[in-house]
Image (cartoon, rainbow, N blue to C red):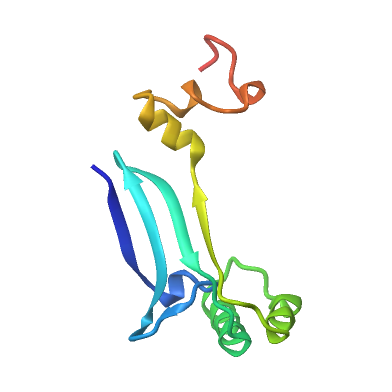
Length: 120
């Protein structure tokens, strides 16, 4: 049975647009089928001021991230970005579920990366 997770805190998704009525949340969802994440999507944040503030906040709390803000990205937002959204689908995972296969290795789309028989 598929499940959509739809309420993500803003701090977890610094590139996603905030929910209009609740700035603590972002416009994002993830789709899970059979316990596997199959899709991830969100509306793109296109406000350069808010984006730079989020990048700055992220640098303050995330120790493992590079200590540099992507100024080129923020500058490009200043020129204007129309409303946009993106969706990423795990094709291998989706095929694995549709074909009822126990392992993603059985359906991987790039067979040159698939291990030889008996090498697991």
